[in-house]
Every structure is written in structure tokens, then in C-alpha cells.
Amino acid sequence: MLVSMFNTALDLIFPITCYFCHRPGKDLCSNCESKYFKPFTKTKCHVCHGILRIPGVYIHRLCVRNSALDGLFATYVLNEHLKRYIGQIKYGFYLKMIDPLKLKVRQTLSNRAFSYDLITYVPLFSQRQRWRDFNQAQHLAQVVDFRALPLLKKFHSTKSQGFLNRNMRKINVNNCFRVINRNAVKDKVILICDDVYTTGSTLNACARVLKEAGAIKVYGYVLAIDELAADA
Ligand SMILES: [Zn+2]
Ligand SMILES: [Zn+2]
Image (cartoon, rainbow, N blue to C red; front, top):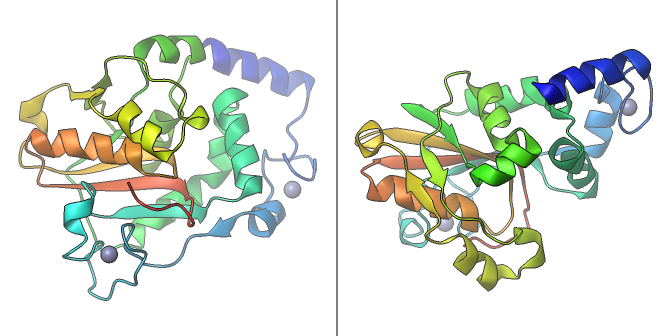
């Protein structure tokens, strides 16, 4: 609330300009969007990076044992431009910077032959959310589908993932998520949203607890995927 009032006041003083070319109008103009952001178009298995050939199946049969996620969808490939832009969304309090991406975000999922019962997001540890005043994964999930619900709780703080290597990240996020209401997720197909997918350890940890609570399938959606990163 406070952040959005602050942003509105800022807009009055400083007119909205494109983050990259500073042309007035939107936070991101369509020229810069197509110039700097690379769409993620391939239908690939997020575990082995191999091509998927069966429509409606988003992970290989043999890869299932290496991931709690039954598939992963992304709008963009993570690159330096997108990292900077997402950095603004996350730490610069520019929640509205997700808005110019709305259409592309929604198209990512409407182009796929799959459906879900519930949509949720990776939670923040509550103290951190209070400090930041919003959760960017929650906002992204609400852009995808206004019915997005909190299904998970993060019950102790983890060190900021950015400073840890891959193995440390896995240990860091394991066992820190809990399902809020086990009855709500039982026998459901769930879509869980986060901003980026790098090692996959966070989304996999979330998917694992949702499945332990009885979810049939859990799919992931991220704004951007690091194509070079191996799966957790
Ligand atoms: Zn621009
Ligand atoms: Zn595979």
C-alpha cells in the first residue's frame, strides 16, 4: 500500500520512461522488450534439456525421478538485461515494472495444453516480506491468474541464495517450506510461480512438500529461466 502510494507520487514528479531507452510512456517499450529480452520458446525437459515430443507431457518419463516438478514453463531466457530489469522489480520496489510483461506472461501458459486446479507462489520468510512490503513471486502469480493463493509458508530464514554455490543452495532451501493446509492441496494439480529459475532448488523444494501433502502433479512457472543452469 505504502509502496504503491509512493510509486504514484514518484510518477507525478518523474514521468514514466522506458527502463532501457528512457523514451516516455511505459516502464518498458515494445522496441526494447524485443531487442533485449529473448523469449523462451523451446519445449524442453527441465531435467535433461532434451526435446519433448509428446504433446501435453512436459518431462521425460525417466527424468521424473530427478525432479519434483512435472514440468517448467518460462516466458524468457535469463540474460544480463533481464537480470537488471528483474533486479529493479525486486529491490527497487518497481512492482509496476511487471505490468508491461503481462501479455507475454499470460501467453506463455495459454499457448500450452495443460490445466491446473490451484495456482500459488514461492513464499518469502514473513519478516523479509514485511521489510520489502511485497513478494514479487506472489505478484507474478496474480498476473498469471488472479486466483493465486498462498499454499506454502517459509518458516525460517535462509541466507540469500545469491551468495551460495549450487550444493549450498540445495541444503539452504531444503526443509524450510511447509504446506499451510494439507487438505487443500490433496489430489490437486498445482502451478507454482517464481521470478527466475537458476539451479531449481527453491522450486523443487516447494514442489516436494506439495507432493508430500498429496498434490498429484506440480508444475513450475517462471518469468525467466537460466538455460545454462543444470537442474537440482
Ligand atoms: Zn525502450
Ligand atoms: Zn528429460
